[in-house]
Image (tube, rainbow, N blue to C red):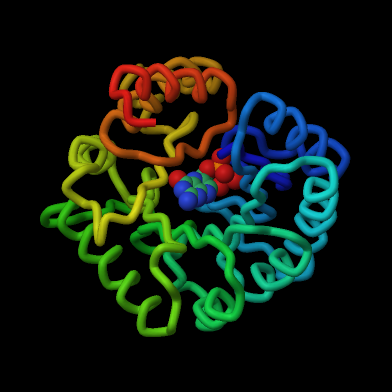
Amino acid sequence: MGIVNVTPDSFSDGGRYLDAGKAIELGIRLAMEGADILDIGGESTRPGAEPVACDEEMRRVLPVIRALREKTGVLLSIDTMKASVARAAVEAGAHVINDVSGMTGDSGMVEVAAACDAGIVVMHMKGTPRTMQQQPAYGDVAAEVRAFLASRLSALQEAGIDITRVVLDPGFGFGKSLAHNLALMRSLPSIRVEGRPFLVGVSRKSMIGRVIGSDDMDDRFWPTVALTAFAREHGAAVVRVHDVRPNMEAMRMAEAILARR
Ligand code: HH2
């Protein structure tokens, strides 16, 4: 899954693709590099990020979705916590709804998901982007994340959603310390629920900067690739990344070793 951030303030590429033309070019390039899915977002979820108004979020993402639907053959995902943005994005051609609040942030989101046949990414987050990194605390982080994902899966099922549409995401960096993120990565196989596949999003995240002791975004490129291979080996079906080609190749290598493609 290649990341297309149509935002001024994303943590690693804010402002670079705010212009629709630049975002579309990026999406086309990532598709050519081998992305199977493009994740298009118009609101940063970095720690402390300010919320974006619904109209503005739609203004950013809808033209990009429409153009990428026309110009690429890959699946398109809308990265949003707002039901109205998700609905408009699906109408514009998005195939997947990726909601970092696990469909808890907007009371209308489950209804939107139930009314269409889009794929769904359910992610765990503790708190909101504004507050989530203020000393997150857990008893057993893996058990708590698993319990949340299981409860969301049940809620979606109760709303009439076929859970084979759902991909689960532990939410790396969303209300988690470095120790929590590392524990979750180690525990991936044990937090699987109902056999649903995992999406892992660690690309360029600060957990990498902390381990390698650098704040430079460029220094996070290779550790991201290493994490992709690790995540694939431990059961991730989708990795959400800024740099598609090297991460896709890392996945292919892990798959060749595991011979389970
Ligand atoms: N991470 C980010 C955004 N959306 N969605 C899922 N499912 N999983 C993730 O780990 C995830 C996500 C944050 O990364 P990015 O889009 O690069 O930054 P920003 O939120 O600042 O735009």
